[in-house]
Image: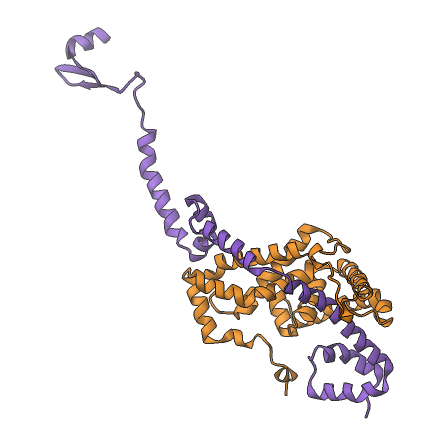
Length: 203
Length: 166
């Protein structure tokens, strides 16, 4: 039995009739239906965008661009592929384009909005936060050195939790290519973060 | 039989991603308790996943997506009534895909062929709207000058004219 059946995709609900109706309404220009599509999927698109660019403002811009494009192109969606595949592919392409336009992202540019607030919780202690930010900086440096395709593979798997099949559909490549990109990306990130993670500097 | 470290290590990444078969899963789980290297590799992959995921989830919590929607909504409304040239430009890929351009191009070419001679017809070199016609017959030659303001007709004796010009 295929192991995938034991790990049902969280996206299986995307193929339901309710969603088909929603998409059909969107294609007729129903903006309320489109708002509902936005409400359902904006977090997923944001995860991909932020996972890649690591900047809130850029991630917001990407979400905005993806949904504006989606509204214009949903007329062309004929249901030959699953809707989430269609949307993910759009998100992946838009994010990679954005990343290339940006050039290298700043590895140590911590968002102002992400500044910590002192708290009594162990995770919020200044020393923990400092270690966490240090590790995030190291991760950003490691991600920066990856080609966009490998970085995207890592984000789709580790952040968004897609299966190999879903990743292949979203990235428009074979499962073998997905596994290869993921493997090289992990190996390079592991090499750079190994010492930090072994020392227990986890967040 | 416990799998060797080298054979299991090839499965570790897929095991970590829940992409192994039941047999492969059993093989890895049998090997793991006795192999600190593979345990370490799995732990490392888990650490990277946490490091990648946590900041994203935190960023997500702090976002105001209502504001993002407002931007999307505004953009969509702006796009709803674009100028005609923008509509044509935006719809160009669809038009080309639907192949309605074939009869459209044919109709345009036909229209150009019909209209073009009208514009290319020789017009009078006189200023204003005027025309001169010259009609020859056996007995008389008639020349008519027509303009917006007046019409002048010359009636010339054909024989005399012929003699005069020869």
